Amino acid sequence: MKDTHSDSDALIDIRCCRICNQHSVLVPELTWRMKPGEAWLVTGANGSGKAAFVHALAGQLLIAPLPKGEVPASDESFYHSVFAGRTAVVSLEAAAALIAEERARDESEILDCEDAGRTVRQYVCEVLGGSSKKNAPLPPIASSLEKFPAVKLCGLEPILDRGLRYLSTGEIRRTLLCRALLSNCALLILSDPFAGLDADSRCILLEFFDTMLKRQKNAGMDDFTFPRVVLSMERFFEIPAGINKVLEFSFKRISFCGDRADYERMCEIRRAERQKNCEQEKTEFLAALQKIRSESHALTQALNDSAVPDTLIEFKDVNVGWGDHAVLVHLNWKVKKNTHWLIRGPNGSGKTTILELITGDNMQVFREQIFLFGKRRGSGETIWDIKKQLGIVSYRLHVEYRMVGGTDLQSVIVSGFKDSIGLYEMPTDFEKATALQWLRLAGFAGRENESFGSLSYGEQRAILIVRAAVKNPRVLILDEPCHGLDETYRQKILDLIETIAGTGLTTLLHVTHDPSEVLECEQHILELHPNERPMYRILSQVC
Image (cartoon, rainbow, N blue to C red; front, side):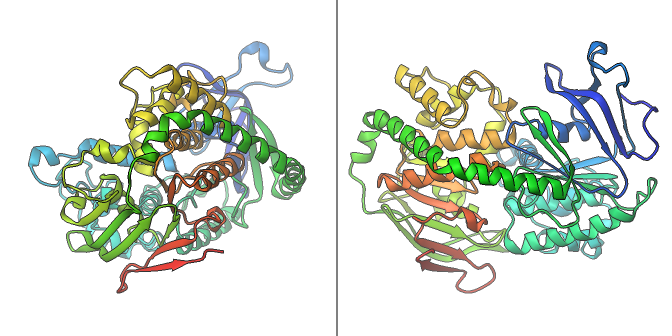
């Protein structure tokens, strides 16, 4: 819906509207304006309506007028945006969609060799006159991409000729940002832009915000020489100084709209209130968790009691790379029972590669000396022999589960017992009952019949963490588990992981860039240093 009744000084003017998809109303009432000189943060808890608002601004959901009987007599319903058709979104969801697209284009089986897919250079050039068709020639401008300020700003020079499917999560996000900057968009929406980025990348991004927001502050109505920026984040954390306005959603409605200073004062009051109840809530959560675990103990006891060597995982002189790009070089590493590991290093250093060698999602595992539970990979074990002993939370798993998004939440949790993406066999009564208990514990009581695809990205991540924990696995693999989680879910998940580690039954392998998410139990560190020799260091005693 568009209307010319909007005030002339508004870049975006939404009055007495609602946000809908084809099936339902997602935000029942919405009034908001964005004026020149304003730099907005959109925030709110997982499932609050924030994601729907962002999708609506991008034109992916409908901003519709309220029914006539719901519009005040003194007002009218309209929506106007000067950015119509010129909005780009960079988000975890957009990154997941890109990886899913690359998988759909993969022709390795047809070619009988590895299909490298599109490179970063090809993908970026698609908005500069290039074609997205397979094997299409690059436009002439492709040879000079290294000179583009946006390419330098996003740090893409070293990875321009690498395949998209070989990028780390952080590298994919930077690629999407660069492409958006070169796309001539007028409005750039960045959703949780710091998630999964290393410290250097976060500094680069903060500098980018400072530059863009300073320009935005002084730009006139008709100045589109650079995109305006709207920032969307789950948590009020690491917010650029140039942000001066905040829009918060709670329970599908706007709960705050105003100046940043006023919002910060409100957050302080909330934080003090939350601190009062924090210990009691944590105690109740852990008691409920212990009850569930004790009831499910019989089902998983056989797995945990069966003979297993003291060394769960071992890498012997492992070397992995693609083409001329070396990712892991002469890596020697052991994981013993009940020794919890933090794996850290900059974006693209090989953290996810290590985890995918363990899970079998990287085929180079079969040519290297990698041992799981006392057996060398490729010595006759099936993928199911391995997966039944692992719990996995990763970006790759999240992408795969989004492709079967119609699965209901109870079935998603039960699939953790089956090690499947989706549920393809009849669950037992015990499995169904246990899944309901875990959903209640995680704050999803009564929502077991909702589809996975209908949830926000953060809610999906919370469900996948519960799925990984449900069977008490020998090794719990956590690749940036708190991506997209609001503060409440984040604390619940960290408490859950810490409790699992304390049982002595499960060993943690945890990848995170956020120092506040490092757990006290993670006393061993595998630290990766790309382009150095040796390319890793083994440390201990995290404080």
